[in-house]
Amino acid sequence: MKRVLACLLLASAAAWAETPPAGADPVASALEQARARRVPVLIDYSAPWCYSCYYMARNVLNGPEWARARRETVVVELDADSPVGARYMAAWNVKAMPTYLLFKADGAELGRVLGEQTRADFYAWLFATAGRDSLDAVKAKVADGSTASVASAREVLRAHHARYDANGGLNWFLSLAPPLRSALARDEQASAWIARLELQRAAAENDLPGCVNVAPMVLEGNLGCERPYELDKVMACTGKLPEAERRALLRPQAEMMQLLLDKRGRCADERSIVLATADLNQALGNPAAEAQVLDRAIADMKKRIDGDLRKDRNMSDNLRVYLDRAGRADDLDLMLPKLIEAYPDDYVYAYRYGKILASRGKHAEALPFYEQAAARTYGVNTLRIAELRARSLQALKRNDEARTVLSEALQANGPWFPEDAAKLKALLDSLPPTS
Image (tube, rainbow, N blue to C red; front, side, top):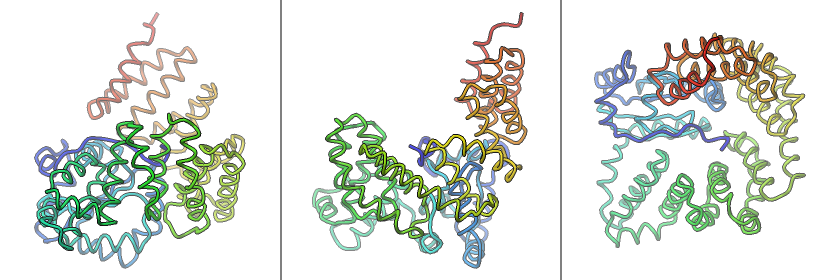
């Protein structure tokens, strides 16, 4: 899906505390400071390619509330592309950028939120969560069908959903005594979280019957700004459903998504709403509505940017994606060099344009952009850009240069990212020997 990012493995807080990444460890240092200051640790997870991160930096992570956050927590900024960031992503089961996590000074997780948030929502979550108990402590409060127990159970279920730990959340629910399970099933909010966990599990396991069974309950719920994320899951996991049945399932969402589109500014993540609505209309066999959604979004972004791509990187990147999704290749070709010029200090747009040119078979034109990106990249993307450069060099019969690019990237970053390194090694081994 376009708006859901990398998926990794889950480990407990104790596990990551015992096995920190080699070298500099900003999290271990933050925990030490937190113990001394008696405050929580706030992890700000981002990446250079994360459009939502630019939204948060510009619109939320500033001002008096952010100053208060820095006083009342120890803030750690982690980059998903770096070796340290990648190791902690696996340990904490971080699957989307940005992710904000709160930990007690002893390493127990207090909570997390994902993606773009409004300023009000983010700080309400942050300052409320900083004073809460850890997940294990909240679980211990779920003892019966009382109002307090049910409220705690909702928090447990929500936390497992935010951690992309559907199996953990559902297994916990099933471990409860039958009367307590019945009480949660009768509670509107708790039952909604159970359904969302079931959908999350079914989507992750490509379980078509499970998706079809739970999707109506999830989509009929009061999802607010999270509707596009759940709709994305349903569209992805029902792709093999007979067309008529799938359209009958999805058709009621058209009106709900249109309402979100019409209330611009109500939700922080406008891009997910636009793309999910376009995808929905495509799934419903309505290309005119699909095109209208994208054309309207493109016109809106152009008006708000007003020719200045540096005005707001989140909006500029949204425009890039809308043009790409609408198939406006000529407009995209005009825009990407301007984005490279507007944001010359990172690799992102040079990498993207090189990849587009290579996909069209224009490998000689792609190489200068790959090389520009390679000069500014780091971590896992050093390996990924090296692979793309090598494939373009290979297509141009420049195998010795491709071999050099791969060998240098593996030497510099291979040990940190074994899966990506394995791909590069396989490509390297496939190159014809030097004549």
